[in-house]
Each structure stands twice: as C-alpha cells, then as structure tokens.
Image (cartoon, rainbow, N blue to C red; front, side, top):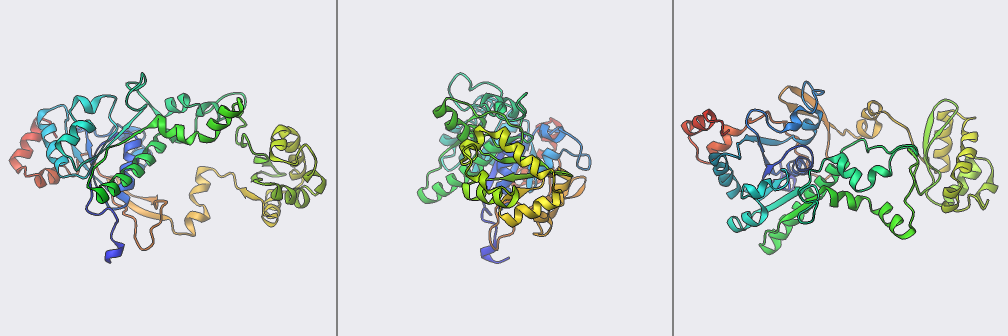
Length: 396
C-alpha cells in the first residue's frame, strides 16, 4: 500500500465505552478510516445489542452493522482492577467515546472534566440523551422516545395515526455528529495542540434534522400535516398508482410541473391553472392535483409511466422492498458489496458512503465478545498469570 493510500486515521487509538447504536455507529466509521477502536464490553455477555435478534448467522443485525473492524476487550468497570486497566488503556489513547447511562461516567470518574485533568491530550466524546444540564439530563433516552419528544413522530405516518421512522434515526443522527465532532476535534488538536471535548445528544442531533418543520411551524404557526409517503410541503411528491403497480414521482419546480402537464398529463393548461400554478397552490389543492395525476396514470402501465417520466425529466423512483433494494443496480453495478468476517462466518456488507480516492475502506471482522482481551492486556504489560487472575475474579 502506498503512503497516500494508507488509512487516514491509522495510528489513532479510540477507546469506547459503548452500547446499542449511537456510539458504536460513530466509532465504526472511525474504524472504517483506519483508527484502532477498542470496544469495552461487559464480561461474558458483552454489548446488549449483540442479543437484539439472531438474523445474521445467529447474530444480531444491529451488532454486525455497527461493530466491524473493532477489537473487543471485556472489563468489569465496577471493579477497582477493571478501572485500573481502563486507566492504563486511556493513558495511551487519542479518543474516549462513551454513551453509558446518565451519570455513569461521572460516578466512575470518567467524565470529560476529570479525564481532561489526568490526560490533557485525550479527546473525550460524550453521547447522551438530552445533553448536560436541564431537567431532562437524567432521563433515559431511546430512539423512539426521542422521535416522540422532538415532534418527529407527529410528522410521519398517514393522517389517521403517527408512525415511527423505520430505522434508528435519532441514534444514527447522534452517531453522525459524534463522528464528525471527533474528526473536528482531532484536526483542532493537530493545529493547536489542545484537546477539546465533544458533547452530542440524541435530542440535539434530531433537533437539527427537524430543521425544516421546525422553521415552518415556528414562523407559520401551522405544523406540516401527515401525508403518509407524500411530502408534506411539496406537491406532487409521493407514490401514485398506475394500471399495474405504483410509481413515486417528485416535482421540484414550475419548469418540471409545466413539462409534466404537457408530456405526462397531456394538458398544458394545468400548468397555469390557478389551483396548480405554484407549489403552494398545489399543496393547498393536493386532493384535486392527485386525482388528476391518478386518473392519467391509471391508463398507463408502470413501465410506460417510468419511461414517460424519464423522457420528460421528472424525478421518479421505484417503491422497493428491502429485498429488492439489496439487488439495486446502484449497489451491484458499482461493486458496492464486500465480504466481511463474523464469529459465525462471512457475510456481505456495503462499503462506507464516503469514497476517498485511492484510499480503500477498512472492512475488518466483527469481534466476538472479549476476542482481543488477552492481547490488549499483554500490550499493557500484564503477564499470563495476571490475566489468569483477572479472568478468575471476573474482572475480564
């Protein structure tokens, strides 16, 4: 491997007191860039996300998604010896990430302020539910709960009832900001010599992602309504039935709307009809607009509709199932699948979304619980006899 193709974070060591989704998602992305990520797990049982399901060769789909390329070290952090091992490990690390329960790291003396005094070069990233301070700081925060608290739940689903987003969007948002925050802190340390802490909460991360409905509601006094798979404030934008299936189409501007009226609806006068001439007008007259589109598309097959939309330059998409998505041309034709190893055998995994020219992504194996404990302790100076004693008293 040439020097330019070396992983960008090679030589960076990350210790992570992580569980579930948010912190593991952040650290997996650091591992994808070549950082050494040492995942601290509970002796014997490990991260509880290992047992969310058994769908991947008997392993959790969540865990194999979030934990490739990491090393697993089991430690009982409630024991003095466990904390001593962690201190030795952190002393040589660049980053410590944690998303334990509210107040847990402070009770262990591992909060950012305490660690900064002991290890001034260490970047500490705290991931919490609702941030530090305020009456919500000590509340438990799971993904669905944060979707509800931020109003996201009120925006998704059909008009009759709210529905959760189908993925762990609050956790993923927090993991993304933790990841980018850590990268920024590493760059800041490189430029200034100062290690600054990073604090991210699920609530704040999803607040940012709620930007459009936040500003819309705050300034209009009206919350966007729920329209199922349709866009709440853009029309037409959503699924429409054809003679033999369903297509999803999206009109983004008046030029596209005019072309759509002429080429697809075969009625150019609709482009200047006062009910439909602007996006705001189409949203206000959504039912009438949708009825016109549905009446026309009901005379066309799905294949005919896609061909017509493509020729007209109107954005469209197939309403894929997850199984159909797995064979999507954008994955298959672009060679986006790789094989990775797990304790139960090989599986395929998609490449990370950020493509760095000439720098291959690190796609290492999923660790078994405590798979690297002996090796890591040996690096820290523990002898075989020491390790045997630690294992006997269940410190590791």
